[in-house]
Length: 66
Image (cartoon, rainbow, N blue to C red; front, side):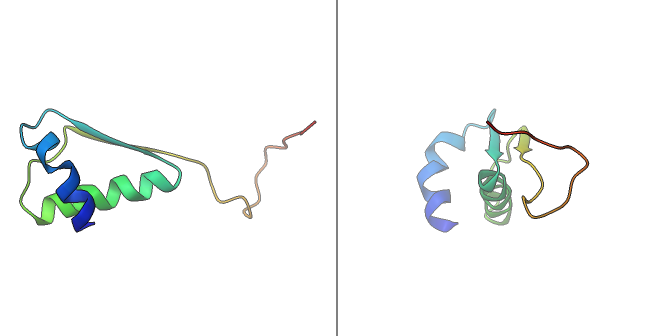
C-alpha cells in the first residue's frame, strides 16, 4: 500500500478526487483509502466500490450461457 500511496500522492494532494474499484479493485480502493487516511493525506470526496458476490455462493438468479 505504501508503494501505491507514493505513486498517487502527487495526483491527490490537491483534493477533489474520488476512488473507484470493481471486483478485486474494490478491495484495492478500500485499502488505498485507509492508507491515505493513516498517512494523514487528503481523503477522496467519494469511494465507489462495485462487484458481485463470490461465484461459489448460491443465488436465486439463474444465468444461462451460450
